[in-house]
Length: 318
Image 1 (cartoon, helix red, strand yellow):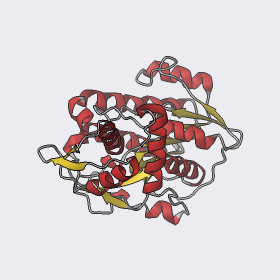
Image 2: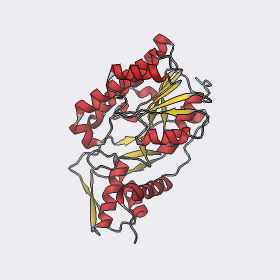
Image 3: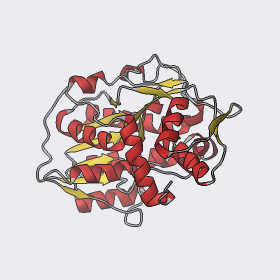
Image 4: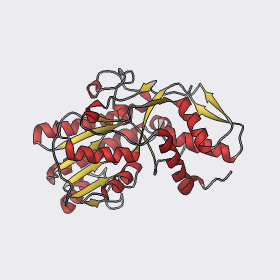
C-alpha cells in the first residue's frame, strides 16, 4: 500500500555511505531538506550488536537506509561463503533491532534480486520469493538478504514498525568495485576491457558463454527510487526496483568495447560458470506508483567509464 512520509527536517542515517549505493543516496538526499548522517566502520562496526545499539541510541536518526553489506561477484561468493552469510546476517539483524529500540520512524532495507529462485518465472515477481532453489554461486549472500527482508516484514507485523524492503536489480555506476577478485559483471568487464585496450591486446577473455540475460540499473536511478519509496511506500511486501530492460552478457561486452574503444575480439572461457541464465525483475508495482528509471544503459556505461578513468583506470587518450 502507499503511504506518505516526509523527509523534511529529518535526520536520515545512510548505513554503508561509502559504498556505491550509499554514495548515490548521499548525492540524492543532498537535494532534500534533510540531514544525512553517516558513520565509518571505525566509529561503529555494524557486525557488533552492542556498538550498533549504542550508536543508534546516541544519534537517534528519524530514518534509516540499510545500504551496508558485504558484497561481491561469483568468485567472491564462492570463496568467502562464511563472510557473506555471517556479515550480512549481523548487519541486518543489528540495524533493524537497534532501529526498533531507538524508535526510528522509517527504515528501508536493501535486498537483492539474487534472493529469488535460480529458475524463477521471468520477469520475477515479488511473490516468487522462496518458491524454488537459489542460484548456488550466490546462495550465501541470498540467504542473508532473505533474512533481512523477512525481518522487516516481521517487525512490521509484531511491533508495528514502518520498515520496508526493496530489491534492486543488478547495479552499476560511479563508486563501483572494480577489483577483479570481487567485482560484479559490469565493473569486471569494464576493467578487463580497459586493460586489454591499454595493452593493445588482440582479444580479451571473458567468463562463461555470454548468453545469460541480465537487467541493469544505474545507481543514481536506484537512489531516486529509494527516496520515492521512503515517501510513498509502506507495506510488508518487499518491492522490486529495475529498469525493465535486459541484455545478454555478450551484447553488454560488445557495448562496453564500443564505449571503451577497444578494437580486439571477445573470447569466452566456457569452462567458467555463467551464473543464473536469466534475471529480469517485474517492477510493475513500482511503475504503477509512478516511478521509472531514466538512464539508458549506453549513457550509463559511458558516464561510468568516464568516472572510472578519473578515479581508477587513469585517463586513456587515443
